[in-house]
Image: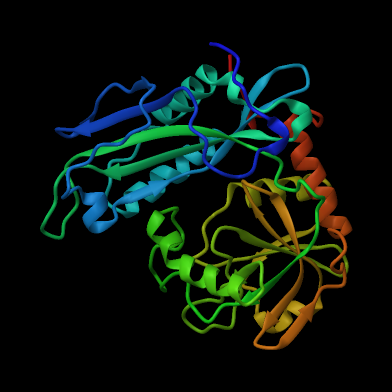
Length: 340
């Protein structure tokens, strides 16, 4: 493969088509053999189930290039397992874990020149997704599906340094009680878009969604889980049936425990936010983005860590996880998949 012409220093978190992507089709009750293609275009019937009834789920993960040139992905087996759970909830044929991992390996191996170099702090963002392709006019699951995985090079999330953000409590609900908030479906993100635009129009960086049943407990933002740190250094993460189970969050909890930190997953009341020393959002894109202030219709909750930099506990967790991903810290067994 020829070297690509990319200004790695100017990369943002946006779509840029690369050379190869993976495609597999489900028809007649079984998955066909998948493979690579250089065509980024998806052709659909006008009555495809994904267009009519939103049968679509997706994942997000990254491939990294280490200082010695080794290319790796971070815990892709966990993305495969989560996508299986998401597919089952929307009555879609799950992509077998072996096929998922094969797609990741093939796309990364075929596009190694698109992976930003180690010193850039960037990565190759990978987007696996599954959607209904068969025509459906009555309200029912489709009979045909397509699984695709593409990548796009992205830059460092914190190009100008890590600065805490200000978020607002949303007047909208992200998910319904006993709904689909716990799976990674496109429809959940569509539900959050209006709230996200309203927050930005009012000068905020993100939303804090409260539980849809009582609006007294903290849930998540439109695309990230919350982390809280108590004044005595305990890591607390909200627990709810309508929160997406973040792989980044799970990894950070494991890291915290390996460092001897106390960790707790429990319902977190909005009324107790002022008792925490640190707050952050966690996800694939940023790993951890610190929150300095939460605003609830004029009421300001300011965290002791302040608006200047990430708090000390979250900084320690951030550095450890980034080190594992970038090959400068030893990884727990099974967390790193080397791409040949």
